[in-house]
Image (cartoon, rainbow, N blue to C red; front, side):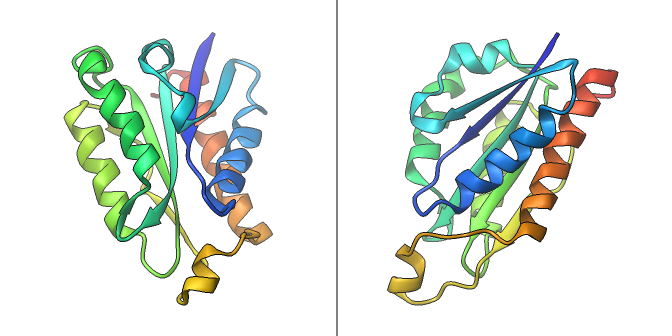
Length: 163
């Protein structure tokens, strides 16, 4: 059985909601086991055991969240040259941009020699003020559906051997 690892970090709930929607979509595929793990609790054993990955993070100060970067720092060298060619996708929960975090994940994944199988899904909530940025988020159903479709597509690709 194939395994999809979904690693996420969330501060205000948006990235977690998107990652959970992706996991729900992936779990519709009976031939794929979906592992849903917070970045702080994910490790190299999880990465090595997976056949594909979905990384979900908020964009903070034009980069991925620090705890997501910590995850990559902890697994990068132990996984290097051991996950070559495995598929991945990214979800970014952002205020008004998201491209900085997406580029940062892409650079790390390129170094790990992972294969991007979908463009980054960047979901923007438009938050601009400190109060809006720090407030708990509720992701619109239309954006959750996009995340669900991404998770389902990753799982279907793993199950069918496309990835």
